[in-house]
Length: 277
Ligand SMILES: Nc1ncnc2c1ncn2[C@@H]1O[C@H](COP(=O)(O)OP(=O)(O)OP(=O)(O)O)[C@@H](O)[C@H]1O
Ligand SMILES: [Mg+2]
Image 1 (cartoon, rainbow, N blue to C red):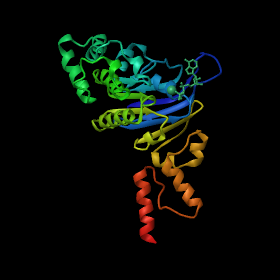
Image 2: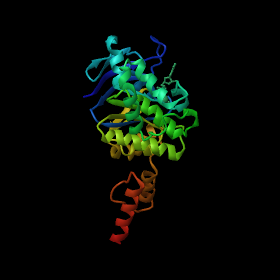
Image 3: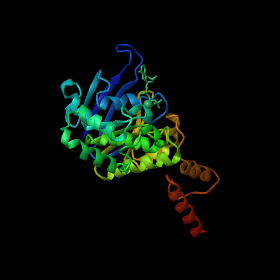
Image 4: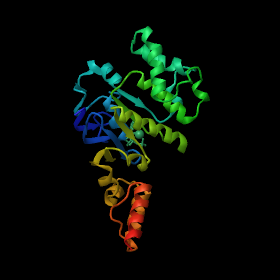
């Protein structure tokens, strides 16, 4: 396992009794695309902040790429290995010029100066933002800003990329752009962890971790999690539209063969129904 956590507990008021995480187990394999779903305050951000030691492990065990999170000496290594993109793109820039912003991160990690221009270029190409080197981040669209923020992360060549609601503030086009890049990085072999409020974005994940009140309520394939109404209800989440329609149709006496997760699957299931009658 690339990421292995057992019985992780965390309280923001250390020693206090209100736990933001309670006995959380987490297993993520190399190259997996994992979506973390849960309502506000369920502990999603708190959990992923442990993965690159933005929060210190208080209780339990956690290993990321064989690095024991109880061993603080290796934190810098971990930060490079495990990049994070946050919700608000505007809070992620330090320079008024795109290429300088990405170079700044590399300088911080003491990447040799002569390597920096090529690394900046490669990172921008990866997120399909080459050509924007001299632009000011504040003149870009939300989706473009997030892609530049992601380029800053990718320039450090991480193995694991965490998106903490990186699409939450974007319009549908921007969201689509960022989601497409997530999947492209996944196809290239990266391990992707995506926290999202949009259940639709979790449909294509390899695995969903469903959180509620600081605990993992369930973990499994999207088909198993998103079509389970009781589970979704317990997590205070609304299932994707095709799932809701499936159950509505069933109540009306129309049984589709399989509960669809996407619009395409829904259309297919309905077409099969017609061809039978
Ligand atoms: N800096 C903090 N200080 C104190 N309590 C915090 C802090 N950050 C989060 N919490 C609390 O910890 C719990 C988990 O919060 P967390 O931010 O991990 O949830 P989340 O699932 O990421 O929520 P959201 O969807 O709103 O981002 C919540 O009860 C929250 O109020
Ligand atoms: Mg959060």
